[in-house]
Length: 352
Image (cartoon, rainbow, N blue to C red; front, side, top):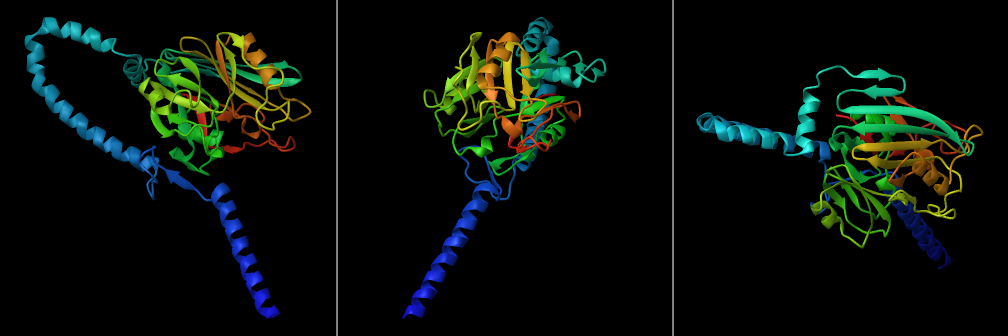
């Protein structure tokens, strides 16, 4: 009888151990790729494959559009007075379409130095500062259109445990400048909108940064407005980490504000807006003898002093990474002993 009880106990322990291992693997290791919200689990198809299908569909639409354009060409010739106002309307129909044409027809090669990039659409200057015993890297970015402020997902897909280094994602996206994003994959809740596509609408109650089509910034609280409504209102990107650091030019955190159980001084990543299409991408090193790191309040002070009207805290710690022109600018570290990038879910970047 005792022997039979021992067998059942061993079997129970074995099942429990197997379940625990599977739970840990499923949570932290096993990659699961999902489609945009509402379409369910994307089994065996990545976003890249979907993009290919969309591209083929777009090509077919362009072919039909071309045929219609050819047919209407004679009408346009017969009504030249109407054609000229129509052309002016097309030219001013939106920043996005105009900047897309600029991207294709750049008239000159960019001027690139170790710490700057300049062409007819994008101006980037990176400066290194020191404050509160911390090294801070500030990228001042001015764009002709908000179209050049973008986001990218690791491996070009949305899912659980899908990660890559900031520099790897940036290289795949042909980014000129990039910083780590909100690491959506480390959270089970929180709005996720990328390039106007809604991926996750479950509220975590956090403050989110909304980047609209015109490039303007907004701070919202999840639950007070739905992710679906944000997309309807023109949200291109919704980043869920926080908190907001600066709103209307005023610091919006206190000296006691922190993220979860984070230490007071940390590597940090933030993004801010100064004026129309004029942005700040900021990363501070931390946890080393050369650079202590910043509190959220100190980071907010930095963003305010740099002129940010709105500024937002992104994922920090070992994730904090700035990439520029093919190289990592700062010294990312998780433990303070080894300088290396942490793999993340996404990036914010500047590029074509």
